Length: 89
Image 1 (cartoon, helix red, strand yellow):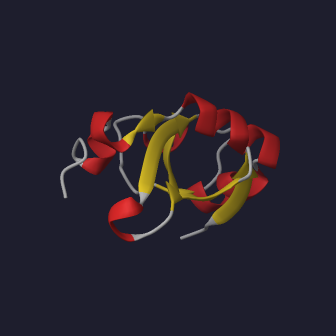
Image 2 (cartoon, helix red, strand yellow; image 1 turned 120 degrees about the vertical axis):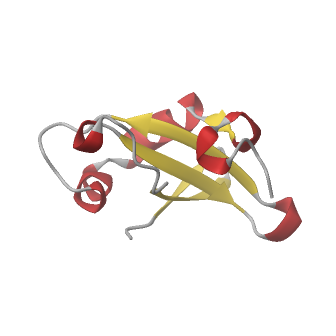
């Protein structure tokens, strides 16, 4: 699984496909943004629609840091997201 790292407002975030499959198939992918580890870990989720027919890893690799930053700003906290079972541990 492809992973990227971006820095937004001085904070380092790891970005990876969330792995959640939706009815939209390859039309829409989920991303997880993660910062830190253990109990202090912060996670945020979003979905995006890549241009063209690409794999999840290829489409993530093609996103610019600017596009990833915008997706992070539009993302939702783990406790509000079905990808993380609404924050269940």
